[in-house]
Image (cartoon, rainbow, N blue to C red; front, side, top):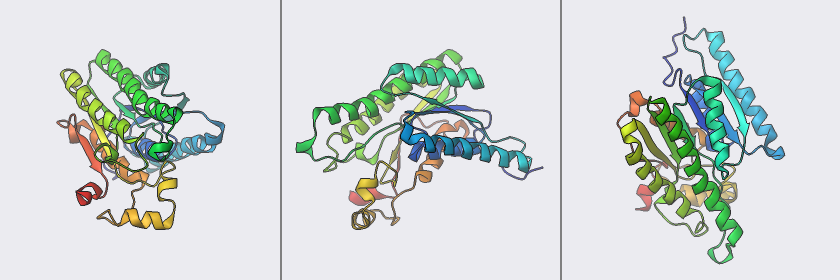
Length: 275
């Protein structure tokens, strides 16, 4: 019999938006390791097909390794579903597909987001509106679809939205971006109040500087990255995997059952340094 500890999310089902790359991917894979079945949303773009395929392969490998070890509780399963989160039907379909496949929905992670650095004077209407639609509207539609399902199930649940340290401070090239992340944090607080009576907890993860595809332009340059890392007490930019643990914590009722309406900073101490 395996000596691996019992997984923290065994038997649970999660739906995650923007799950084939970056933070969403890291959360999806860690959820699977922790025994959670995952419905993974992505845009379905041809250029991202390699990410989708590799995610499915890695998820299958984790589950096979769990079976080979003889784990009492196997790692979870994963399936993917394409769709644009700015269209409400996308996350409605994702939630329904998760329920059809695995029986119910216990966890929802609103992760999908975009960031294109731009000078305030150069931000056009298209960039501003797209950023709001994806980051803020998409989060709202997904959380609402998940909450409706969880209320109908009467089993409670955990909703997690990915906000940012940018919800708490401005950025020179982020005038279009920071209000969306502040809006997510505000929305989480209001949803937590609204959903508490249904035993549905709603919280936010607030990453600092994380090296993902979205931040490549900002920290890919070595000199720029060193300047940013000088402001992080831990001395490095974060990795997507650094967000997986906080997500598991917020998803697991045994660990965070009284955490509701919170914004969990995971920034290596950057915000404290800047204050």
